[in-house]
Image 1 (tube, helix red, strand yellow):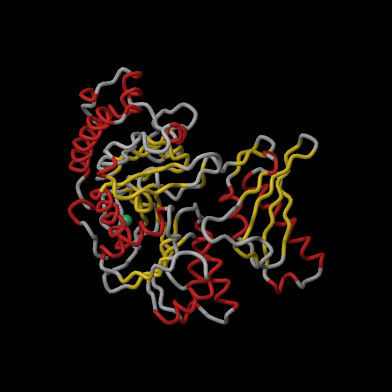
Image 2 (cartoon, rainbow, N blue to C red):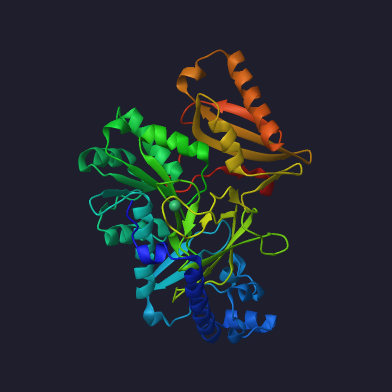
Length: 434
Ligand SMILES: [Zn+2]
């Protein structure tokens, strides 16, 4: 498979680190002078830009959190005057104000390059046609993928989310070969296609690039068999740039290469803030080292995963992050047991006849937390007798208990009972907060 930017993506470790240090120092110097938040935070920690002499010195710098971004809403974290900003995106927060991010012309070029690298890693070339089902708008997914795909020379169909039936017709008529979107919306698309009597086998996709929500290996198997394509995970978040911070390669589909000439990645213990060695699981932290309008220093993503510095078959030398198992935000604590929706998903997908549509409902009854897992099953199974359905519910519940130590009531429901999303799926309904 061709590598889009061979020089940077296959750079020996020592050279990558030299590039990182130079770019980190330049970023630190610039934001210290231009962003009052960072000046204050550095001063408080007793650090001056010239103190950053090695990559290890990064660990002395305080973290940046979503709360910091919210406190500086909307533009106070921008490091350039508005006349240099050419684009604004925002991510919806679950509570309160959204996070606003800005891009200069150079930032847009960098982002497009990293998406072009990502799509190349997923097997795309200028001969491909992209069906871009990411939402276009304030969300970074749609337009972010769009510019990078054009840079790679692909023909982009900017179909966005929604209008699902029309999307299927477009897939049949325009013959796109690469698909992208959130995995939950893509599964919804597959479902509508089946209803319309359209088999993905007869469509033309070779790769699907799915991101914006964490998904499991079992979901990959589901996506690949339903859609007849290679499912590739892409990672990014608007605070750091948008999609294209890291990508899986087609060769291994195992861990996402972080574009280290633009971002420094760390894994920390979420409780102590201590940097953890490669291989250990903790919270992902990113520092952007080339962004102009909205650089972030040691931004805590709340995504939980580990890093893998083993060489990769694709030839890229950039470190890989394993698929995030979830966000510390999404982590449910049920009677003292920590559990991520993705762990429940894993168990569900291993059960025959289960559809990839589920929802976790948490309630508090008499001061006791209860978890109900609602999951759709195949129509054929649903017509089976009550007894075998109950047996199946018990079986799944036992598997969840065995693998993740949490007691859950499993409720099998008819196909299409759980609401479909046009963007990110709503996996958890926590009634305890109401
Ligand atoms: Zn690779």
